[in-house]
Image (cartoon, rainbow, N blue to C red; front, side, top):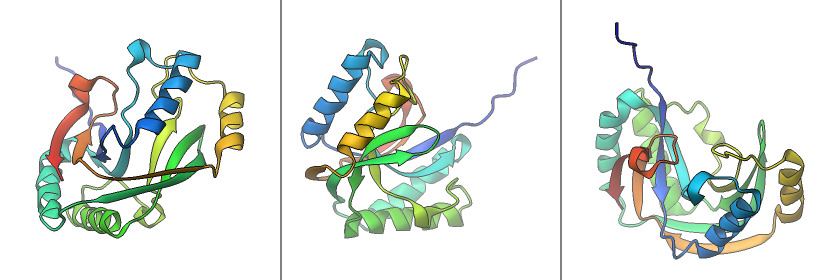
Length: 188
């Protein structure tokens, strides 16, 4: 008898040009190398999460994303500084400004996903746009909590100005495997 496959949560993300993120990527790489955090140097791709859905909702979400993209010509991204988020573990992130174009696409997308009953975000009004640089989520060798605390203490609020435009809106599975990760990619 075949096992029933359970649905997993997927992430709707904005991808950004690597060239624009060079300083952040260099920082991420140095930390990952120091702690030997990820297997085969397969680092998490830097991105901005816009929303979440269940796996079975992906086809409907793709149509909603296409519809939302018709109303934007570009999505401007501005990054201000490092910031620490504290949940179960610390996350060191880059704080992303809520530009008009980012707010417009994110709000429009959330409203349409909610109307369709497929967004899994309960509190979109509390959503903070960010790019995660350091976390232990995919870590094979997790960074010790005391070291994460130190990074947060030293870097929280330090300026890291970056200005760029989003490349695409993609739907991702929660994996580092590049062949398994991308469910759909729609160019901005």
